[in-house]
Image (cartoon, rainbow, N blue to C red; front, side, top):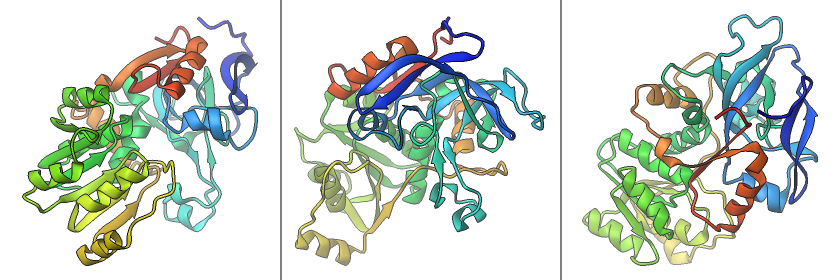
Length: 359
């Protein structure tokens, strides 16, 4: 068990770019309308690595981590529909509730949002607090490890919904990181006829095939455009999802999309993208739709949003993300795995960090 006192907790605290320390800090206070959650597992997002080692957060010190599930610890006095020990997931975006986007429930488009793990303290810790409206109870039969992947799975689902993924389509995914793999899994669940996935790392492609994405190819060894043409009788993909964030894969997604098809930009961009005039002309002639996506849909009214769809699919065993988990790491060893992810010194897919005693 962690060596936290009654009033303190262990947390991985970012004091400056690259300066991460495992420390004892006060447990977060439970303000009106909020719930304190004891962390079960917190996933490491691809965005956490540049946030910790390159860019920094919005202020220091900060506790990172926004993909998490845990158990209710304490509720503020007016909350009567949750009890200590209830398993929950937490939507990490804290919307203002006042802007035009919030008025229509488009919380991811909030003009003045806060965010657990980048603007406010997140879940690389033993506890975190969040508003009651951001919590969803975890259905029976869904483990905390699985539930900790709700956020990235919702992001992947949202991207496909933005791209109007449907039955009988050919969907091409460029990039086989955890979210790219989740896009491929979701596309199959949503009825795509062919899911074609590209990456340059053989371990990722092998994992994709174990997940049932048989059409997985190394784009250093074969031409993605030619493969898609061969598999679609020259028509191109109905939907291309760019999930790597590099210029080459964005260009390939543009080239591979059929007339009237959709391209979804999902990967965080790592460099400038310049398209040649001839390719822009093709986009115009083919009337291809380029669609941005960010975050996921969340409803305070219990509607069938991206988050609840994910949890329901996990509960029904339609969605199985357990094979993506390659590392379960105690908080005391978290900095080591973050360095491994930064330096790419060993293969990883989904990395989950947990306070000691929570395994």
